[in-house]
Image (cartoon, rainbow, N blue to C red; front, side):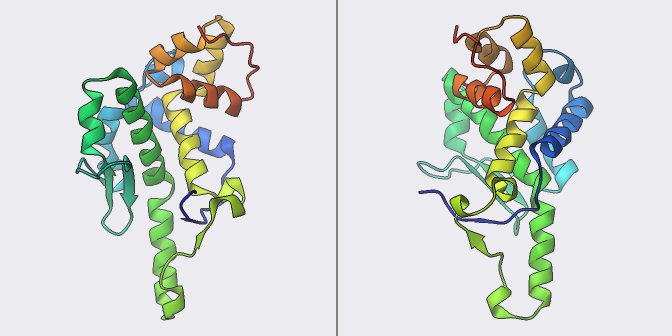
Amino acid sequence: MTHRVPLAKARSGEQIEAIALEIVRDFQPQAAAMVTAFDVERFFDCELKERTEVEPDYPYLGEGLYGYTDIEEMKCYISRELADAANEVVHQRRFLRSTQAHEIGHCVLHVQEFRHTKAILKFMHDDKHSDLTLHDQDEIKVYRNPEWQAWRFAGALLMPAQCIMSAVRAGWTKKKMANAFEVNPAFIDVRLRTLKIPTRVKAG
């Protein structure tokens, strides 16, 4: 069962891709031009607050919770347990990177938007409108789902479209791409489907 979410501003995949690519080009230009890993950990730790006003933190969140963003506290939390495990296990490090990219997506795309919406609702002085209305994810259009938007952003941040296409044209396997981008193979599969790249890419 998926958790309920507020409606986000409608955004196309292309719009989200452009926002993520602009960040990559500004922060780590070589990651937009060649197949290499985007330094998402350094961005999260050193750039997030300056760019979004959201402070990163690594508290202990408990089993099954890996990260979340709090628009009231202006904090972005990544599980300390996951961060610690990432130092020991490759697939956990890659999962940490995708989780950070996803939460960065929320910070970039949604924090100021939802804070503005809440301010408008509170200004109405109406208790029933005092919070953002939540919806089941399967009942809203995907382009207004903040979770879909944040995952689309994460894929574009860690694997810019032109870099994925360069790897495919060079005959790279999914395994080789996963190693180069430092993501888990399942994330490569999702990215290839998102970009509508034929499944002729070998697993490796």
